[in-house]
Image 1: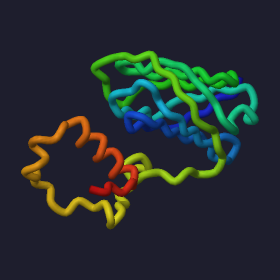
Image 2: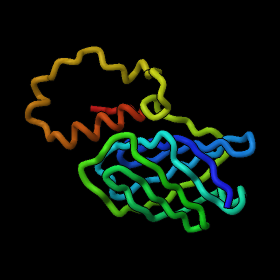
Image 3: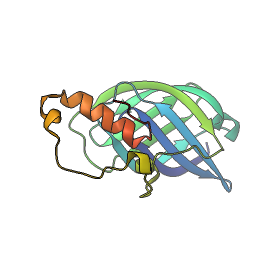
Length: 154
């Protein structure tokens, strides 16, 4: 079966991968449930029967281990790879999403660029007084939304 290598990044809830096949870029964007930590795999391997399997909606199940990733898609495609950093736990996981040959709009932290949205730029890194009494999980989720470019309305 044909295969290709490419990077995969997960922000903790959404996984984005890019694979170069026959001169074209193929992108995979799927949600990851459950996944409590971001991870990255710089050289994942996608194995497929035909490039037609790398288009449209998909569902998958898999394993995010302490140092590896294994994904099996409902159309017969699989992705495996070694994680860039070791995780503290292993998770059986699943999700759905889509394959595409059109480059998706990627948030800067997933695209590997230093671009930032002026509206979401952080100008003061010191903690605010009211942050000390807020739920740390809520603060983390708000930061994820900001990183994804979603405006936060108070």
